[in-house]
Image (cartoon, rainbow over all chains, first blue to last red; front, top):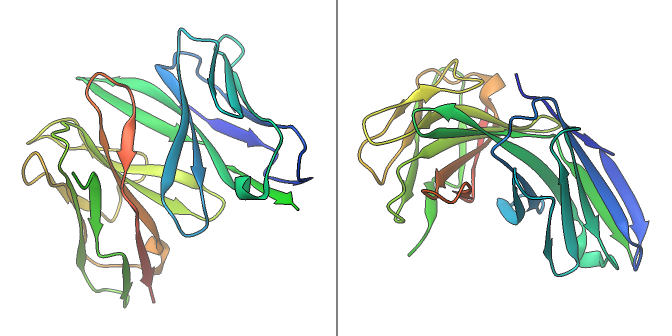
Amino acid sequence: KQEVTQIPAALSVPEGENLVLNCSFTDSAIYNLQWFRQDPGKGLTSLLLIQSSQREQTSGRLNASLDKSSGRSTLYIAASQPGDSATYLCAVRLYSGAGSYQLTFGKGTKLSVIP
Amino acid sequence: NAGVTQTPKFQVLKTGQSMTLQCAQDMNHNSMYWYRQDPGMGLRLIYYSASEGTTDKGEVPNGYNVSRLNKREFSLRLESAAPSQTSVYFCASRVPGQGFEFFGPGTRLTVL
């Protein structure tokens, strides 16, 4: 059974700092890995999707890396802003047969960026 | 193009009551999913439907039933609600060939 762990569970940083969120998974036979953002009381917003054959993806101030063999991914946020405060979820996708894929989520890292 | 819609947004039930959570997508996706999110637990898959007419259990199916009414709609039914089913429920549909899903805004359910 795939398990996804995110460390740390919570993080508080001053505005302007660069930071790294960590995600690890137990089964390396993943189809892809996705990072989401969730604001309090809201749904999920997809940030970055990394296919299993890729090493990293970038979008603006966000950079996600994937090391499939070691079962790790990191989300790097440059020059953090108060608007980045949210919970960040890591999810890995496995092929479950018959054209179906299943996502397994970590419990998230709650980020607070202090002005 | 509304994406994935869920109704209701909020619901309060008493123990033992039944209700159906509705989900619809207008993107012609084949696969649809129901997740629940509990504090400190992340999202867990309840049921999924790879295509119209098929449904399969996920990680936490007990206490739930689903219906894939047509390609657009995938409903989740609680026959006899329990306080342990207090949660936020998310529906998602998968983009064919793209390897990712669109998520609905969620239904916040409280069972007293």
